[in-house]
Amino acid sequence: MFRGVNPINLDTKGRMAIPARYREQIMGCCDGSLVATIDTEERCLLLYPLPEWEEIQKKIEALPSLNPAARRLQRLLIGHATDLEMDGNGRLLLPAPLRDYAQLDKKIVLLGQGRKFEIWSEALWEATRDEYLQVDEGNEIPEEMQTLSL
Amino acid sequence: MFRGVNPINLDTKGRMAIPARYREQIMGCCDGSLVATIDTEERCLLLYPLPEWEEIQKKIEALPSLNPAARRLQRLLIGHATDLEMDGNGRLLLPAPLRDYAQLDKKIVLLGQGRKFEIWSEALWEATRDEYLQVDEGNEIPEEMQTLSL
DNA sequence: CAAGATTACCCACAATTCCCCACTTTATCC
DNA sequence: GGATAAAGTGGGGAATTGTGGGTAATCTTG
Image (cartoon, rainbow over all chains, first blue to last red; front, side, top):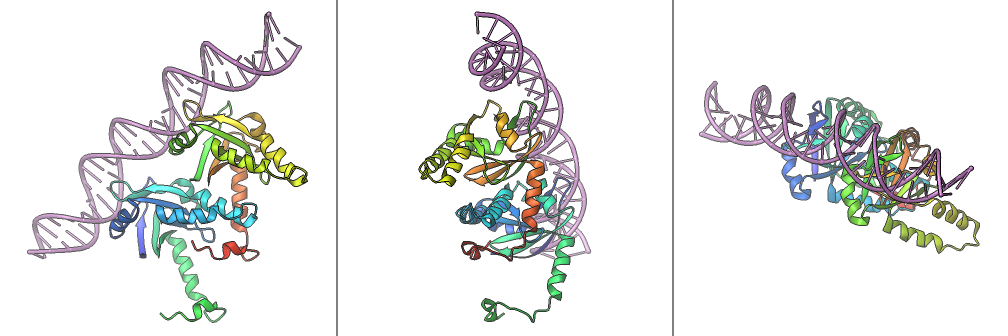
């Protein structure tokens, strides 16, 4: 279970250092093997431990491939999914196509999100967060959420 | 399980280098024997390990051949299917008719898609991808996909 | 059957990636 | 507050990968 915001700097080679507090857990659950792909709704990346991702890929592959919406998901998610390995210093090299998609340059944010992480450009993350905070919560809370007690 | 985006250059002879990270897997599952055919919906190519393809060909052949839609699939898919072998440097020679169909010139993209790969011209892939990203998800999500949680 | 074109195989160079080592900075503990 | 350890950062160099092209074998075509 990952959580928390982590401001991180990409180095000139496009590498990001995973914060030390996550490393043990990552080594434990997947021996440093991760998969990064794009988020189809936002310009950010999703980062899964390999076993987590394989579950998801199976589900996506099983969708009827003649259905346009399913093909879209397959092409976007599986098409962009890239295997990554932590190096000896606990860093990940993010491939250029993924960096481009999420507009990552130097300052990025690693967001713990339960089974996965999200990777944002810092600027984009802050803008998106502020937007969320300004939303008028009054309208349309789905019923699944009505019973949530925080 | 193939996945990921790979920008590749075709050389002047129409050969494409398979990225090294897939080679071992390809040698393992089919000893370098692959089958390429066309995608009937998009101007791109499909690339299967030989055993995978043979399964699919069986299914296509089994379709009722008096049905026009079935004959269409048979003629298009089986008709364009071409056996390819990796050379000593891990490259595939894409035959001219297939290159023409998918409008491949120098810059192409190899897209991992689970059991198969897709091969796109870079320009066409980017256009298609951008189109997918702009789709308003609101309309017509098939019910199989409603429950998908990423 | 011969000539041209195409394909297969091979070798060599160029470029990139990856791995490792070392330094700087931050955190921790006494 | 200083010393020690841990974490973050940077970069050099070796090994792998990508690329180009030459030559020999095969196929096509006239």
